[in-house]
Image (cartoon, rainbow, N blue to C red; front, top):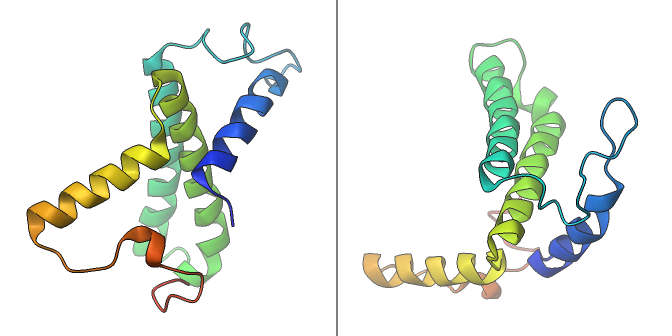
Amino acid sequence: MLTFDTLRKANVARLPQFKNKRGLPAHSQPDGSDWSLSGWSNAVLGELGEAANLIKKIERGDFTLEEMREELGKELADVQTYLDILAFRSGVDLGRATESKWNEVQQKGGLRSAHPKQYTDNDPGKR
């Protein structure tokens, strides 16, 4: 199972390897610091827009969710990847931030569900 930490390490290692459509390095700095935070945010939103476009097509009946589930998963994975890079460039540990926010919402809302670490791959809510 991919963890936040593993994704971060892979993204940091992969950043200097990215090429643009012309085959040239996509970044002048190996850590992606040549892009501003708004540039990384735009990348996240671009991928989220691609996912939203697929959902629109599913909901208007062009495709079924079953037909597009794998493609939607790929777009959501792109969102997650760029979100992690945005967090990296911001100095945010996304795993810790997510866990902290989860706990905050649990406490504020008086929710009783388990801590996220207690869930397993056998969870019935997992597809």
